Length: 217
Length: 284
Image 1 (cartoon, helix red, strand yellow):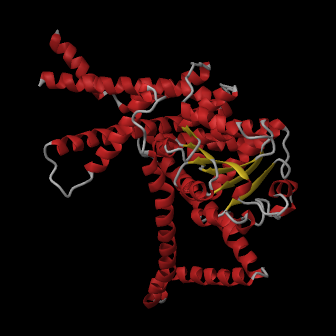
Image 2 (cartoon, chains in turn green, orange; image 1 turned 90 degrees about the vertical axis):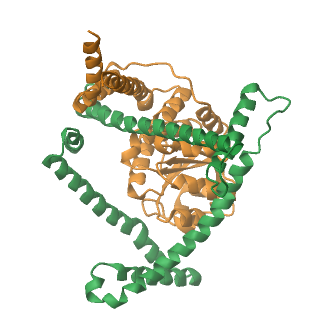
Image 3 (tube, chains in turn orange, red; image 1 turned 180 degrees about the horizontal axis):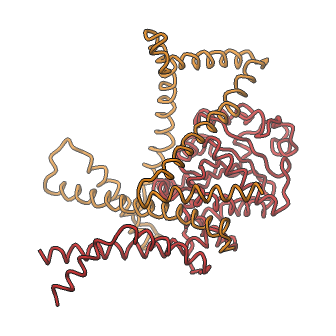
């Protein structure tokens, strides 16, 4: 019975959201508000139960002194974040700057990790992947062409963003090639985006036709 | 006469948007209702992912990260079910976790329960759900020494090391970390996949395959080209290809015909729109 009610509610919500295609209307607005409210509430509860509370509980009760101290530091920084709440503008407006400490901590750690992982895990392997053989003993014609396209594509696209020299003569052609490569990339990304959106529509229509209307099995 | 034809062609550019919606609906629904199938060549990147999974031996551990929510489930959920089918067929041990708040966990557990039931697999013996922890990069780095640093308990709140499966896969030292993971499967709708590759693959050398929503697939092709990932399932097509390689016919294979029909319709509408514009220029 609960499943049946669930399916009907989901079908109503789907149709209400799709009704926006025919113009903004109160049913759409109603469902949109339900979605935002339910997501936020559910998110807060799960975040607290799955992440915040077990972390505090374990950190405080542990015998490991290092973990205990770091947990207290994290809790302290977490409390400082609360100074950013809107209400603090009325209660203690001169103390809102305190919230910058945890933000600075998170930014610092995030940047540090980001730079190392970005260089080690992204830039180096990607650069190495462009060191391709143009002609080898057992390389097929398709591979040679593919490797050439990749090398030319990388170099010309990179050069497209080099603005320190006037782009004239041969350099202009390199820039044009780079632009064409970038346009093709955007085109393929756009094609994939359409595919994604259509997939979502297929998912919803499949749900309506199978789970709700039982037309397809 | 010529003027009338041009006027008609021009009018095609002014089709009411609701007619377009109705056409898209029909192009999607009719193939689903009639259960039409069309043969599709399997993409090399999906074949590569399938082969990487196929090389694993019974008892090997795979870690699946379901970093997506219901908003991208039509693309990624069929991937999860297909990969789980493959894994359970091969008697692999499955660990599941998410970086995508609660939604990723719900989707992951839903798929896992469905497929595990089909193969008669038991929780705690054949698969474990680690759960969700926030802080993507911190979680990944923390897991490198011992998964229990981050997931001291499973999703049900029981200590991870109280399960038979944990004892089996952690080995003599009792520590489970990336060294015990033979394949990481990232099902991604956002940035978490990038970090899996940039941190866990680059630093700890864990082999991985990625299943991504179509929107972010072009970004992941660079990782496939550089061999940082062993295979890539891109969007619904990727899921359909994996189903085809497994010899099963699921939602993705069925949906691809609608996908094809809608794409033909879109191309036709773009063509008509351009034709209408040309006719308008002729007339003016």
